Image (cartoon, rainbow, N blue to C red; front, side, top):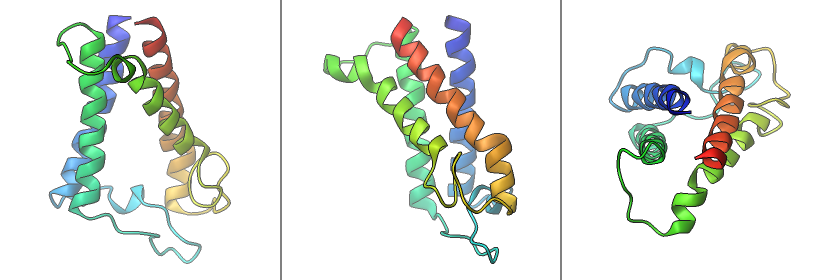
Length: 140
């Protein structure tokens, strides 16, 4: 199970780095990671704050994975240490289900660059991370 946690931790760390790269002005892949309307216009433009919040949120998951490995201790209420990865797993699962318009398994706009990448990569990664976090929280 430890190697699996390291693997998931590596994926989460890479995702956090990508979000911090965007937060500090990097633009490679930026427009491909944002849903588009039918006319090709981005539905929103994340700024430094939004990208940083996602990056720090991903790093918090990494901290809990390191905690599950027993490398660090956390002085938090038991309900947080016992259920945090379940809660985050539910969030990733909600993201994978989507908003029924732009993102997720049930999106209606399916013929954009983002939609194609979402179908091939983003949604499956979200499902994989969600199921992985459920497994880690259950067995660790």
